[in-house]
Length: 292
Ligand SMILES: O=P(O)(O)O[C@@H]1C[C@H](O)[C@@H](CO)O1
Ligand SMILES: Nc1nc2[nH]cnc2c(=O)[nH]1
Image (tube, rainbow, N blue to C red; front, side, top):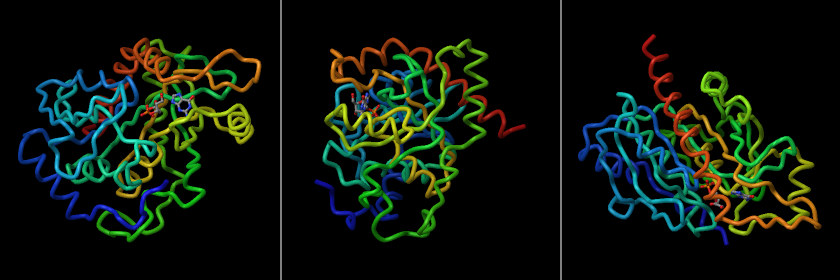
């Protein structure tokens, strides 16, 4: 089921794509944003948009999932240059593992320094409620335990080292910044932090799987983000990620709940505006801190 780990995209492939994009827009983004399921509205906040459909971008994969529009949007957020992926790629769509995270290398070659990722996830932490926003402090790369890592295959030192450190994957300063902004915006009641676990999907978890993940200390489970984080950190970008808890993971055989994508999109719609405000405030503060 897993793609050939040896077939990657070369530095020159990524550079060609980045140069192709840069030739068609004057925006020089320093922040890159990835929108999770149903959270693509973030891109609509950008001003002076230059929009590329993924199908028109050389080497770019296509979005196949409802709630992922498949557009790369350049623009400014309160004057700060950004690029935003309105739709991401998942292992279950059948993509080469390297292709899922390829946009991170293109971000890097566009000049992006900080990546902000969002996703929809199922809550395992019993203190979490549907609609909570979890700042990701760490992850479990479950497919990685079986060797499925986007950095498998030849390493190009122009991107990063062969054995990158991941104990500092999620930037602590950005986590604190998100907490502070969340408090200022009055989001304290639903802002949490925790550990995200990547599974391959597309099937949701069985009760036994959910119980196992809970015992392992996982707070939220999903089907994305981790590969992007690994590749972004490998090439030296700062990373912040958050999960919107769109549903409670079922851990009880007597529960009548059934995980489904419609509920995921529904919860995303309810919280989208607040998430957009949180992320856009982070963008301005990141840029302002750089200049002070
Ligand atoms: O791209 P994300 O991680 O937000 O999408 C989640 C995981 C699956 O793609 C889908 C399940 O509803 O939402
Ligand atoms: N694996 C997984 N991914 C999700 N994405 C949104 N909700 C869920 C969930 O419950 N499980």
